[in-house]
Amino acid sequence: MKGFFITGTDTDVGKTFVTACMLRTLTDKRIRATAYKPVQSGAQWRDGKWVAPDVDMYRKVINVADEDGCTYLLKTPCSPHLAAKIDGVTIEPDRILLHMRRLQQTHDFVLVEGAGGIAVPLVDESFLVAHLAQLLSLPIIIVARASVGTINHTVLTVQYAKSFGLQIAGIIMNGFSTPKNEIEQENIRMIEAMTNIPVIGEIPHMTNFLRGEIVWRKEWWQ
Image 1 (tube, rainbow, N blue to C red):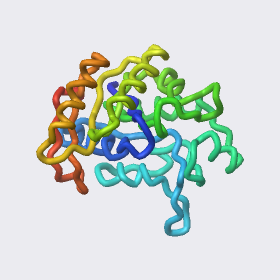
Image 2 (spheres, rainbow, N blue to C red):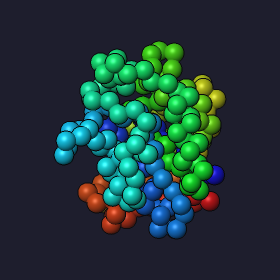
Image 3 (spheres, rainbow, N blue to C red):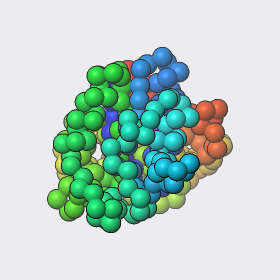
Image 4 (tube, rainbow, N blue to C red):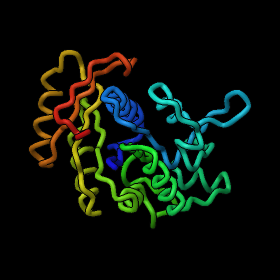
């Protein structure tokens, strides 16, 4: 079984969008794949029930039920540790591990999307997104912006991930201009030079990931 843990340099950096783009690539190659959001805060009330918005994005590519795509669905749009406290929920990492193992039994590739950035607390200060990536034993992919400010955010995220001994498979940069401008091109060069981690994907700014042109600089699905 192959898979990645997808994290980001910040909240709203485009992790869910990138995860869906990766899922689209896998399904296009006829690989049995799914995406999984262990902890989702900011649930939305629709048609008489709470819905996971990130799983909704996955559903544009594959058929997945909320209970299969998410273990903990929390209502308040804030850090998961606080959202769980507000909802009176206890997040149990072993339950997430069991959920992922069930997905591994029925799929050849599992994309696990973290919450926010890699230092976001899931339980409290003793169990962060980085600890979850360790527990699941998956190489990580870091999603970063293409715009100004991304060098600092990305380098810090890489260094923090390395401090946990995490294997970093690559960086995917999201939101490029078409064509890329000089600043964006230099961001790629400098991030690779400073981190020694390859930028494996370039995703332009687009509204429909099912039709947009994605540039994969490495065949990460192999």
